[in-house]
Image (cartoon, rainbow, N blue to C red):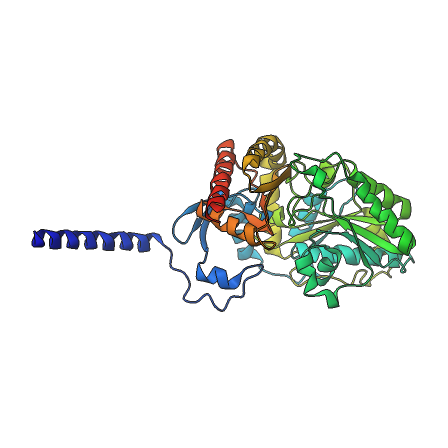
Length: 467
């Protein structure tokens, strides 16, 4: 009997070793050290104790370093609506690198930038035909602010130096973007170096508009904050008002019906430029090329980034009305630089190649209409989660939704804990504070939407059980 027990013990131990070996074979080894990389917007200490490393992405799925598949419920970071590992983009980038890897963007050029600018302008509303390429969304916002200031100086109205942003707005992490933005945690550390002459509208997330699918019926009057600010400081001193049509990073705050139109009316009344930050909402997320078309309100300047290359290569852009470009350019002598602004990586060949390949995908696969047609199914699925007691609000528009989790002790604790449970359940998404932001790729089929909703329910329920 003792020998039999010993033999069984050996067998059990051998089986354990085999399982461990299989686990090791399945796992991709993590780097030798995680300590040197200071990660952005991350709880570094917590993450490095239990890292979530992605090693592969294809279609609408990621694979982590343990070999687990996770469905991508936020299109990377709202930047991969065409799904991952697109061979068209990969091949275009590779071909471009073989031919021309870099050319300085100042006083020289590359044909691809002119081709992409022309294709982008076909999708922008009305006469927003002049495209200035930047590196990312943050640099696009900085550029838009500079264009507004340069425009009024060229017109002889240099006293227009005030910018109006909005509470809970996110416009990137450069000083200008933080200044006009309204994300408290992003602002308070750097409050002593923010831009002067910046004012903020109230946000549009009202308690009477909880669990509303699409545009809320009430709240359009909040746009009158711009009229109030104009009355306090003088409308003639305001250069621009910048808003996200749908506030994305803060948690998908959909504008009330008539709100954006009212902002447009007030800007027109006082000669203020209206800037739409469409870094997240642009390129089909709202079921139209841009939110400007989805809500039928045209800005004077519009920023974009993220999906412009499907997230493969960093690229941002600013679209301006023709007359803004003409005013700035015509104010300088022939042969002189008209706009003293730009970046080392403005319109570099590899980003233009990725952008052009993405334009082909958008056209061939009719991505904008795919998003528009899938939106009702996606939003209906999202709102089936309202029976979970831990959820305090659900809202959404197009292919983007926000799920608020009830706060636990401090802002962000519940959201982060829930985020980790969702990851364990096989779902990757973006969480901001206590809001889960869901923004699937447009290539999703109904079965993928079903999987996202199922895993949202599983992960949130597991969080409820374990907290």
